[in-house]
Length: 353
Image 1 (cartoon, rainbow, N blue to C red):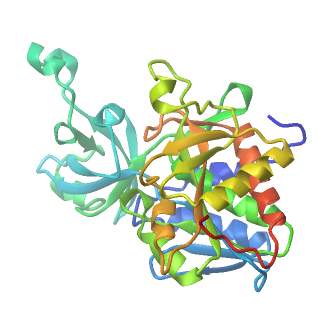
Image 2 (cartoon, rainbow, N blue to C red):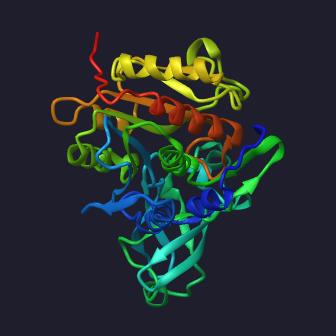
């Protein structure tokens, strides 16, 4: 952890603990909004639930910092006669990650905790033991004795998320569900709050990134930013079995990763790289030959085109109940964004050379 680092871990913990899968982000949005209001931002929201926090309104250029607040989750599709719930994935799940987990079901009758069940290994055939489970093989058990009791709490269309707490590990590392991308929304707000200079900075907690970037597209259309930076997570390439020659070199604790590739705007990326060098902040490069699979793809295509870049936090075990990041990387990313924005000239223009 950096000397003098004063990250608001209580805010990050509250943000990751608020259940809100794609399309149902009202709980994390409320947490983020309260923090933005306490920081003195002008706060607003739109019809789909994006939350906007504006600092120095009327300044120039207008900078959009986007971090998405939805998380992958589950959608209840059926309740059987015995009270077991069957679910469909919201976002990209590896079903192996779900086996044996506890979930929080946001039912129409209130929250209930459930268990993800599957046939016990003792009851499986030899052939079944060799098969990778599919979501269709799993169910959620909330303890109900029949369908009537279960449906007093839960019905088709209700959502669920993994019930996994925020934990602090060794060496300033933390883990939680929903690190992807509540940590990006956390950074967007903190960087906007810290940045100096003359730019208007709008931090946006975007919705529905995991299912197609609906929120980012709407937010960019509304704001017409002069430039935008999506803050997300990327795979930390420092765990067993990963080859750097294929995936690049993006280590946990190595600082923010800057995306390089076709979709990102070269002028903005070069400015971020220069700011990092001037501030002595180490960065790595994440190669994205086509789209970046982040909010930046949707922002870049807004209106006549928005100069966009992606700054990512190395993350171990993405799309799992135990996503891990290094708080040093979080702080360095905030510092980089604040330093870059502070140095922008009011008449700055971002042209593709």
